Image (cartoon, rainbow, N blue to C red; front, top):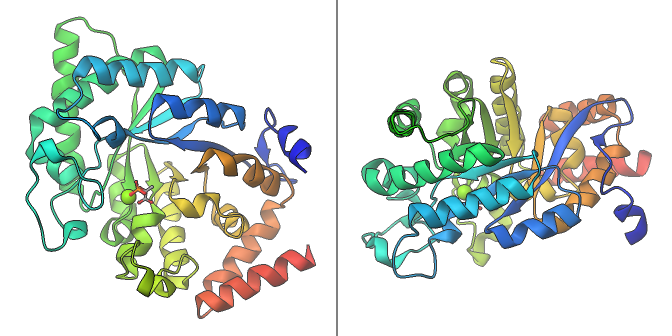
Length: 324
Ligand code: PEP
Ligand code: MG
Protein backbone atom coordinates (compact mmCIF):
# COMPACT_ATOMS: atom_id res chain seq x y z
CA UNK A 1 0.00 0.00 0.00
CA UNK A 2 2.88 2.34 0.89
CA UNK A 3 4.47 1.64 -2.50
CA UNK A 4 1.20 2.28 -4.34
CA UNK A 5 0.98 5.65 -2.61
CA UNK A 6 4.59 6.57 -3.39
CA UNK A 7 3.94 5.86 -7.06
CA UNK A 8 1.53 8.81 -7.05
CA UNK A 9 4.14 11.40 -6.03
CA UNK A 10 4.36 12.92 -9.51
CA UNK A 11 0.82 12.12 -10.65
CA UNK A 12 -1.95 14.72 -10.95
CA UNK A 13 -4.89 14.85 -8.54
CA UNK A 14 -7.53 14.12 -11.14
CA UNK A 15 -10.82 12.20 -10.98
CA UNK A 16 -11.72 9.31 -13.28
CA UNK A 17 -13.86 11.74 -15.30
CA UNK A 18 -11.22 14.44 -15.61
CA UNK A 19 -11.81 16.98 -12.85
CA UNK A 20 -8.37 18.15 -11.67
CA UNK A 21 -7.73 19.80 -8.33
CA UNK A 22 -4.60 20.78 -6.43
CA UNK A 23 -3.45 18.85 -3.38
CA UNK A 24 -0.79 20.62 -1.34
CA UNK A 25 0.71 20.76 2.11
CA UNK A 26 0.58 23.00 5.17
CA UNK A 27 3.87 24.23 6.64
CA UNK A 28 5.02 26.33 9.58
CA UNK A 29 8.64 26.87 8.56
CA UNK A 30 10.99 26.38 5.57
CA UNK A 31 12.15 23.11 7.20
CA UNK A 32 8.67 21.64 6.73
CA UNK A 33 8.85 21.96 2.93
CA UNK A 34 10.93 18.81 2.40
CA UNK A 35 8.15 16.55 3.74
CA UNK A 36 5.57 18.24 1.50
CA UNK A 37 7.73 17.69 -1.59
CA UNK A 38 8.59 14.09 -0.64
CA UNK A 39 4.90 13.39 -0.36
CA UNK A 40 4.09 14.89 -3.73
CA UNK A 41 2.60 18.20 -2.64
CA UNK A 42 1.61 20.27 -5.67
CA UNK A 43 2.27 23.39 -3.65
CA UNK A 44 1.88 24.84 -0.18
CA UNK A 45 -1.69 25.87 0.50
CA UNK A 46 -0.91 27.32 3.92
CA UNK A 47 2.34 28.69 5.30
CA UNK A 48 1.51 29.56 8.92
CA UNK A 49 3.88 32.52 9.22
CA UNK A 50 3.20 33.00 12.94
CA UNK A 51 5.70 30.23 13.69
CA UNK A 52 8.46 32.57 12.51
CA UNK A 53 7.38 34.91 15.31
CA UNK A 54 7.10 32.35 18.08
CA UNK A 55 9.68 31.21 20.64
CA UNK A 56 11.82 34.30 20.42
CA UNK A 57 12.18 37.62 22.20
CA UNK A 58 11.57 40.05 19.33
CA UNK A 59 9.76 39.99 16.00
CA UNK A 60 11.74 38.57 13.07
CA UNK A 61 13.30 41.30 10.97
CA UNK A 62 12.27 41.97 7.38
CA UNK A 63 15.49 40.29 6.24
CA UNK A 64 14.87 37.14 8.30
CA UNK A 65 11.33 36.85 7.01
CA UNK A 66 12.36 37.55 3.43
CA UNK A 67 14.92 34.76 3.66
CA UNK A 68 12.35 32.26 4.99
CA UNK A 69 9.72 33.14 2.37
CA UNK A 70 12.24 33.20 -0.47
CA UNK A 71 13.61 29.83 0.55
CA UNK A 72 10.16 28.24 0.42
CA UNK A 73 9.21 29.95 -2.86
CA UNK A 74 12.49 28.92 -4.50
CA UNK A 75 12.24 25.37 -3.14
CA UNK A 76 8.87 24.91 -4.81
CA UNK A 77 10.27 25.44 -8.32
CA UNK A 78 7.37 27.49 -9.62
CA UNK A 79 4.65 25.68 -7.72
CA UNK A 80 2.58 27.99 -5.49
CA UNK A 81 2.93 28.83 -1.82
CA UNK A 82 0.17 30.67 0.01
CA UNK A 83 1.74 32.71 2.80
CA UNK A 84 -0.71 33.63 5.52
CA UNK A 85 0.08 36.88 7.28
CA UNK A 86 0.57 36.85 11.03
CA UNK A 87 -2.20 34.94 12.84
CA UNK A 88 -1.40 35.74 16.46
CA UNK A 89 -3.80 35.56 19.40
CA UNK A 90 -6.33 32.93 20.30
CA UNK A 91 -4.18 29.93 21.20
CA UNK A 92 -1.05 31.41 19.62
CA UNK A 93 0.84 33.51 22.12
CA UNK A 94 3.73 35.81 21.30
CA UNK A 95 4.94 37.38 24.56
CA UNK A 96 6.95 40.30 23.14
CA UNK A 97 3.89 41.69 21.35
CA UNK A 98 2.43 42.48 24.77
CA UNK A 99 -1.09 41.58 23.82
CA UNK A 100 -3.58 42.27 26.60
CA UNK A 101 -5.00 39.33 28.58
CA UNK A 102 -8.58 38.81 27.45
CA UNK A 103 -11.66 37.05 28.72
CA UNK A 104 -12.38 35.58 25.27
CA UNK A 105 -9.09 35.38 23.37
CA UNK A 106 -10.68 33.52 20.45
CA UNK A 107 -13.14 36.38 20.02
CA UNK A 108 -10.60 39.05 20.73
CA UNK A 109 -7.66 41.03 19.51
CA UNK A 110 -5.98 38.67 17.09
CA UNK A 111 -4.65 38.06 13.57
CA UNK A 112 -5.69 40.72 11.04
CA UNK A 113 -7.20 42.75 13.88
CA UNK A 114 -3.75 43.14 15.42
CA UNK A 115 -2.07 43.72 12.05
CA UNK A 116 -4.46 46.52 11.02
CA UNK A 117 -3.83 48.15 14.39
CA UNK A 118 -0.05 47.71 14.50
CA UNK A 119 0.68 48.76 10.99
CA UNK A 120 4.44 48.74 11.36
CA UNK A 121 4.46 45.05 12.26
CA UNK A 122 2.19 44.38 9.27
CA UNK A 123 4.18 46.51 6.80
CA UNK A 124 7.42 44.74 7.66
CA UNK A 125 5.84 41.37 6.91
CA UNK A 126 4.19 42.56 3.70
CA UNK A 127 7.51 43.98 2.47
CA UNK A 128 9.26 40.68 3.17
CA UNK A 129 6.56 38.67 1.37
CA UNK A 130 6.50 41.02 -1.62
CA UNK A 131 10.27 40.98 -2.00
CA UNK A 132 10.28 37.17 -1.81
CA UNK A 133 7.55 37.02 -4.47
CA UNK A 134 10.21 37.90 -7.05
CA UNK A 135 11.76 34.47 -6.47
CA UNK A 136 8.82 32.13 -6.99
CA UNK A 137 5.07 31.70 -7.08
CA UNK A 138 3.87 33.39 -3.90
CA UNK A 139 0.28 34.16 -2.97
CA UNK A 140 -0.69 36.08 0.14
CA UNK A 141 -3.68 35.66 2.40
CA UNK A 142 -5.14 37.43 5.40
CA UNK A 143 -6.46 35.44 8.41
CA UNK A 144 -9.61 36.01 10.49
CA UNK A 145 -11.33 38.36 8.06
CA UNK A 146 -14.84 39.21 9.20
CA UNK A 147 -15.91 41.99 6.84
CA UNK A 148 -15.12 43.77 3.58
CA UNK A 149 -13.60 46.83 5.25
CA UNK A 150 -10.82 44.73 6.76
CA UNK A 151 -9.97 43.39 3.30
CA UNK A 152 -9.90 46.89 1.83
CA UNK A 153 -7.76 48.21 4.67
CA UNK A 154 -5.31 45.33 4.40
CA UNK A 155 -5.08 45.82 0.64
CA UNK A 156 -4.57 49.55 1.19
CA UNK A 157 -1.54 48.85 3.40
CA UNK A 158 -0.33 46.37 0.79
CA UNK A 159 -0.64 49.00 -1.96
CA UNK A 160 1.37 51.48 0.10
CA UNK A 161 4.13 48.95 0.63
CA UNK A 162 4.12 48.11 -3.09
CA UNK A 163 4.37 51.80 -4.00
CA UNK A 164 7.36 52.16 -1.72
CA UNK A 165 9.08 49.15 -3.28
CA UNK A 166 8.47 50.56 -6.78
CA UNK A 167 9.93 53.92 -5.77
CA UNK A 168 13.06 52.10 -4.64
CA UNK A 169 13.15 49.86 -7.71
CA UNK A 170 12.90 46.73 -5.56
CA UNK A 171 11.43 43.90 -7.64
CA UNK A 172 8.31 41.95 -6.67
CA UNK A 173 5.57 40.01 -8.43
CA UNK A 174 3.15 42.65 -9.76
CA UNK A 175 0.54 39.92 -10.29
CA UNK A 176 0.73 38.45 -6.78
CA UNK A 177 -2.64 36.95 -5.88
CA UNK A 178 -4.28 38.12 -2.67
CA UNK A 179 -6.81 36.01 -0.80
CA UNK A 180 -8.46 35.64 2.57
CA UNK A 181 -9.14 32.86 5.01
CA UNK A 182 -12.81 32.04 5.40
CA UNK A 183 -12.95 30.99 9.04
CA UNK A 184 -15.49 33.36 10.58
CA UNK A 185 -19.14 32.49 9.88
CA UNK A 186 -19.95 36.10 8.89
CA UNK A 187 -17.31 35.94 6.16
CA UNK A 188 -18.67 32.59 4.98
CA UNK A 189 -22.22 33.90 4.76
CA UNK A 190 -21.03 37.06 2.96
CA UNK A 191 -18.65 35.10 0.70
CA UNK A 192 -20.26 36.25 -2.56
CA UNK A 193 -19.75 39.86 -1.49
CA UNK A 194 -16.17 39.39 -0.30
CA UNK A 195 -15.23 37.44 -3.44
CA UNK A 196 -15.23 40.64 -5.48
CA UNK A 197 -12.33 41.99 -3.40
CA UNK A 198 -9.95 39.04 -3.61
CA UNK A 199 -8.36 36.50 -5.95
CA UNK A 200 -9.15 33.43 -3.86
CA UNK A 201 -10.49 32.03 -0.61
CA UNK A 202 -9.04 29.40 1.68
CA UNK A 203 -11.54 27.84 4.08
CA UNK A 204 -10.12 27.41 7.57
CA UNK A 205 -12.38 24.71 8.92
CA UNK A 206 -10.61 24.49 12.29
CA UNK A 207 -11.88 27.92 13.23
CA UNK A 208 -14.96 27.94 11.00
CA UNK A 209 -16.34 24.87 12.80
CA UNK A 210 -15.37 26.25 16.21
CA UNK A 211 -17.17 29.54 15.59
CA UNK A 212 -20.18 28.08 13.79
CA UNK A 213 -20.77 25.46 16.48
CA UNK A 214 -19.87 27.85 19.33
CA UNK A 215 -17.49 25.09 20.43
CA UNK A 216 -13.90 25.65 21.58
CA UNK A 217 -11.77 23.57 19.20
CA UNK A 218 -9.52 22.44 22.09
CA UNK A 219 -12.09 21.68 24.79
CA UNK A 220 -12.32 17.89 25.21
CA UNK A 221 -15.47 18.10 27.28
CA UNK A 222 -17.55 19.40 24.38
CA UNK A 223 -15.66 17.79 21.52
CA UNK A 224 -18.84 15.90 20.50
CA UNK A 225 -20.22 19.27 19.39
CA UNK A 226 -17.25 19.98 17.16
CA UNK A 227 -18.97 18.56 14.09
CA UNK A 228 -17.28 18.92 10.69
CA UNK A 229 -20.15 17.00 9.08
CA UNK A 230 -22.97 19.01 10.58
CA UNK A 231 -25.16 19.96 7.60
CA UNK A 232 -24.67 23.61 8.61
CA UNK A 233 -20.93 23.32 8.01
CA UNK A 234 -21.39 21.55 4.67
CA UNK A 235 -23.91 24.18 3.58
CA UNK A 236 -21.52 26.97 4.55
CA UNK A 237 -18.74 25.34 2.55
CA UNK A 238 -21.04 25.03 -0.46
CA UNK A 239 -22.14 28.64 -0.10
CA UNK A 240 -18.53 29.83 0.04
CA UNK A 241 -17.48 27.81 -3.02
CA UNK A 242 -20.51 28.87 -5.08
CA UNK A 243 -20.09 32.52 -4.06
CA UNK A 244 -16.46 32.53 -5.16
CA UNK A 245 -17.04 30.62 -8.39
CA UNK A 246 -19.79 33.02 -9.40
CA UNK A 247 -17.08 35.69 -9.47
CA UNK A 248 -14.50 33.47 -11.15
CA UNK A 249 -12.41 33.03 -7.99
CA UNK A 250 -10.93 29.75 -6.78
CA UNK A 251 -11.43 28.17 -3.37
CA UNK A 252 -9.06 26.11 -1.26
CA UNK A 253 -9.36 24.52 2.16
CA UNK A 254 -6.50 24.42 4.66
CA UNK A 255 -8.17 23.26 7.87
CA UNK A 256 -7.93 19.67 9.12
CA UNK A 257 -11.04 18.69 7.19
CA UNK A 258 -9.14 19.05 3.89
CA UNK A 259 -6.99 16.04 4.83
CA UNK A 260 -9.84 13.90 6.16
CA UNK A 261 -10.54 11.06 3.73
CA UNK A 262 -14.17 10.86 4.85
CA UNK A 263 -14.65 14.42 3.62
CA UNK A 264 -12.82 14.03 0.31
CA UNK A 265 -15.77 12.95 -1.90
CA UNK A 266 -18.07 15.61 -0.43
CA UNK A 267 -15.55 18.45 -0.74
CA UNK A 268 -14.69 17.38 -4.26
CA UNK A 269 -18.39 17.17 -5.11
CA UNK A 270 -18.99 20.65 -3.72
CA UNK A 271 -16.43 21.97 -6.21
CA UNK A 272 -13.42 22.66 -3.98
CA UNK A 273 -10.43 23.61 -6.16
CA UNK A 274 -7.51 23.14 -3.78
CA UNK A 275 -6.89 20.94 -0.73
CA UNK A 276 -4.05 21.71 1.69
CA UNK A 277 -3.13 19.43 4.57
CA UNK A 278 -0.33 17.96 6.65
CA UNK A 279 2.26 16.28 4.42
CA UNK A 280 1.42 12.75 5.55
CA UNK A 281 -2.15 12.98 4.19
CA UNK A 282 -1.34 14.28 0.69
CA UNK A 283 -0.87 10.98 -1.14
CA UNK A 284 -3.86 9.32 0.51
CA UNK A 285 -6.15 12.16 -0.52
CA UNK A 286 -4.68 12.15 -4.04
CA UNK A 287 -5.27 8.41 -4.30
CA UNK A 288 -8.87 8.86 -3.14
CA UNK A 289 -9.47 11.63 -5.70
CA UNK A 290 -7.99 9.52 -8.52
CA UNK A 291 -10.47 6.76 -7.68
CA UNK A 292 -13.50 9.06 -7.61
CA UNK A 293 -15.89 10.20 -10.29
CA UNK A 294 -16.63 13.92 -10.05
CA UNK A 295 -20.16 13.30 -11.27
CA UNK A 296 -20.80 10.74 -8.51
CA UNK A 297 -19.17 12.98 -5.92
CA UNK A 298 -21.44 15.87 -6.93
CA UNK A 299 -24.49 13.65 -6.41
CA UNK A 300 -23.19 12.54 -3.01
CA UNK A 301 -22.57 16.14 -1.95
CA UNK A 302 -26.05 17.17 -3.00
CA UNK A 303 -27.60 14.36 -0.96
CA UNK A 304 -25.38 15.13 2.04
CA UNK A 305 -26.58 18.75 2.10
CA UNK A 306 -30.14 17.52 2.64
CA UNK A 307 -29.32 15.22 5.57
CA UNK A 308 -30.54 16.25 9.02
CA UNK A 309 -27.46 15.63 11.17
CA UNK A 310 -23.77 14.83 11.26
CA UNK A 311 -24.64 11.22 12.09
CA UNK A 312 -26.84 10.99 9.01
CA UNK A 313 -24.15 12.51 6.76
CA UNK A 314 -21.52 10.09 8.08
CA UNK A 315 -23.86 7.12 7.55
CA UNK A 316 -24.54 8.33 4.02
CA UNK A 317 -20.83 8.59 3.17
CA UNK A 318 -20.14 5.17 4.63
CA UNK A 319 -22.97 3.53 2.67
CA UNK A 320 -21.78 5.34 -0.47
CA UNK A 321 -18.23 3.99 -0.07
CA UNK A 322 -19.38 0.38 0.26
CA UNK A 323 -21.49 0.84 -2.88
CA UNK A 324 -18.58 2.24 -4.98
C1 PEP B 1 -8.09 27.00 10.37
O1 PEP B 1 -8.58 27.77 11.22
O2 PEP B 1 -8.72 26.07 9.85
C2 PEP B 1 -6.68 27.14 9.96
C3 PEP B 1 -6.19 26.46 8.94
O3 PEP B 1 -5.90 27.96 10.68
P1 PEP B 1 -5.31 27.61 12.13
O4 PEP B 1 -5.54 26.14 12.38
O5 PEP B 1 -3.88 28.01 12.04
O6 PEP B 1 -6.14 28.49 13.01
MG1 MG C 1 -7.61 29.61 11.89
